[in-house]
Length: 112
Length: 117
Image (cartoon, rainbow over all chains, first blue to last red; front, side):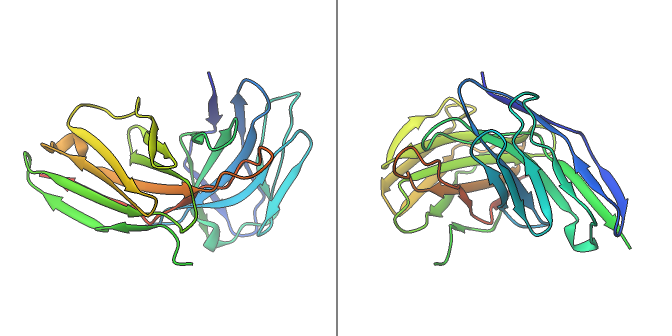
């Protein structure tokens, strides 16, 4: 079946530090891959996505590259800000309008 | 667009009572998803609809849970009777089936925080 595994948190970083949140997946076929972010008290928002191998999704300084050979989609940001404190979810979708399969989420806290 | 609308935002009820959560998807979207989020289990898919038809309800935990989508602009998730272990944040999401297999983004509502005492 389809599954997503992401690094457990919480992750605590100082402002301007480099961020990596690891995500690996298991899927049949060629899934699309997503990172969603959940700010405190809010619903999930799409942060970035990639629909095929070697695609790089990017948004708000965050990047992730779809690596088929390692079945990974790691999230990176070169310099985090306090406002990036949130829970980050890696997810995949295999086809059409089937549901997303989510990882368990990684809580990021950035301190000034 | 107002986005996905959920009501109520917060619900506190006593064990044994009926709870109804409501969702209005984004206009024009043809898929709707109900998720439950808890600290212990993370984000779980409960049920989803395509074109108002339930496609997969295997995530619905028990017969106490039921969901309906009477039309394209409204869905309900009902718990009857409610139990303390149902306490969670319930999210509704909607998406649009794209053409040529494009995998549409899911848009999430703000969630309903349910507390069953």
